[in-house]
Image (tube, rainbow, N blue to C red; front, side):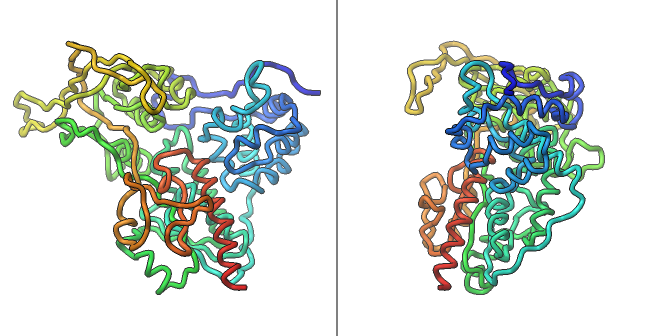
Amino acid sequence: MANMQLNKTPMPSQEPNVRNTNFNEVALGYTEQEAINEAKRCLNCKNRPCVGGCPVKIYIPDFIAKVAEGKFEEAYDIISKSSSLPAICGRVCPQENQCEGKCVRGIKGESVAIGRLERFVADYHNERCKKWPNETKNNGHRVAVIGSGPAGLTCASDLVRRGYRVTIFEALHTPGGVLVYGIPEFRLPKAIVEKEIKGLEALGVEIKTNVVVGKTVSIEELQSEYGYEAIFIGSGAGLPKFMNIPGENLKGVFSANEFLTRINLMKAYTPESDTPILAYKKVAVVGGGNVAMDAARCAKRLGGEVYVVYRRGMEELPARHEEVEHAIEEGVIFKTLTNPVEIIARTTEDKRDPKNNSVCGMKCVEMELGEPDESGRRKPQVKENSEFVLDVDCVIMALGTSPNPLIKSTTAGLETQKWGGIVVNEDGLTSLDGIYAGGDAVTGSATVILAMGAGKTAAEAIDKYIQAKNQ
């Protein structure tokens, strides 16, 4: 019998005033009984709207039915048919806008906690599975994947399971892309990402780090000299955007990319880190998306007083509601309807900063919302005579990112959008034969699951392309 409770089964988590001083995972996960209780809320709808909301088309009611029966490994097998990164997706996917947003139970109450159940199933399996999978049978064909983020990992996973020998080329010294440099440990423990990647290597995927495609080796060389029959570009969108206001070159101004990479990948919060970040006292994070929430919550854990500065109101924040809630609970201060116009340098002589080139404040103006713009959101306008100075010694710009132009500039004939995104068709095929692309390199900054969906689509197209060429 279905469990008709209106609300989701709560997930245990660290208390806000405890978690904002450490980088341990915030959410603690369901127990077996909590997972079974939540799974029984699923009505197992015949038309399965939740599956339609999932970019990788997980058989959601099927795996939830197995959880309800306590058959957790069978549930994992069902998820694994569609998703190669379930422990990751269960933590960072915006389910409220995708599968859970389509759930019938959400009409009268809260939707089924699909993400929490996916996480539980993946964690249950990973805690008990001590053997790595066997290497897949080699079909004799080779594919190169550029970038080891969610798009690249998914593409590689789907191809290696079809027998292809896949090599991933990663620019950084650690594979995982945005999963390791962008998402904080308290949302996605890096041990989980590492285990997922080791599983792919066991299947036969080769990963080469410290290889910058477009500099170390070109796409043309991968085809002509190294013999890869197809290439997937999943290089992400790692080029940060700035406001181009006075003072952005001062010490203490970071892009969110740099700040989060130092925190997440280089462990800058630990005493032994090679790339430490100073313990700033007052931090302003400019922006309102998920990256801004990650940066603000990291800065809070370093001991600072943290402001999120956003030019629209709380209702217009593009970040996930859950992330905003967590930030507020942890003590982050939101200064909405506020826009920076200048970052101010020190003006008094300071032995620690003799050149007066570090941050001592941020000049802002108050905003008010006017008529909707082309995006449908009300356009922010400057309120007259509203200028004020926010007392901060660090500013983090979290205004979005665009694809790095390196691959475009070194690959003749690769068509891109004006803003840098690679142009592809519905199968992920670029303007070049045998070259596919997906994820943030195509769309700009988006979600992990959308990047995975693009990698999955491209893998299927690459398989058809190579098989057709060899008939």
